[in-house]
Image 1 (spheres, one colour):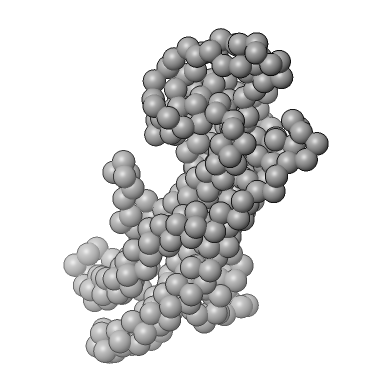
Image 2 (cartoon, helix red, strand yellow):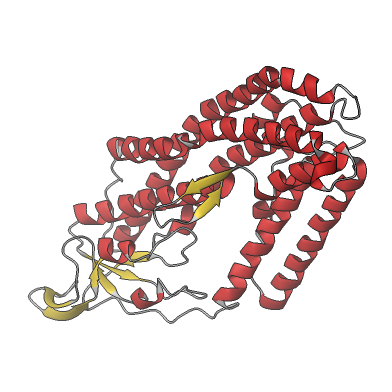
Length: 384
């Protein structure tokens, strides 16, 4: 059974949902704190005096997030590792009557989970810092409404909160220098780590069985980073660089087969293969037996898959804007934009045949925005 980062997509969703909930809970809590008594002449003084209460509320959100995320990350990494190992057992089982059980991989799981916890742990203090900064910024802008071109304090507060909801918690930069918002950064990091766990377990299991070569699938809607590696044979580990090798036939004793090896798997992954959202998979290569499979038909272009991702992000953005709305009219306008972008997604998947991944449009219902009929849930409950 081939291994691919996609096999852990549902596991990454379980982790990123926690951060989606925390981000939405933060937006709701700040909005609620700022809009209470917004028309009072003493609003500025009262809000500045209440910053300590907001800090406590945000720290509650972070504490709940830390407790939940660490356990969710370890569970997800362990399951991804197990899936990768089991995929190798299935492949090896096709060669023998019985295949050895996959190794427990406890140390590898702890190492990979620990690295992801450390990587995502850095976002927690930024949640607090940015939450308090936005709170102070809204107070300053609302207090200076006439100078900023807003007719009322309410208008200025709505504009500042709308900007915050539009971008969410930001400031996370990956190794390439690309900036992300909170949930996108955590999702990217988690998908990358879980993909590594699955692939590592798979290749380690093949190595234990004496398998040195693997083959990259030929996937539809591929990106430019992956395309050079499609259908190529790679060394499971070892030096980079293409080479021609003589290896023994997988089923015929003493028969040698010439194999063109494009490089090593670590080399290909360093070049971008198996990145988060990668559609390619890695499978066992048996010299003289394995044949390159035909490329599955493409449902759409790579650009159309990216268009779908853009529309999904817009749905989530407008859901955050609904959470930051200062009145029912603004909330209704935001929800209308949510429906508009969801309609565009329906049209795209109908035109192309791409699968609709509704979860990627969701900000979990546990942190549902307040409405006239349903008040917002307390921030700590929203994270749980």
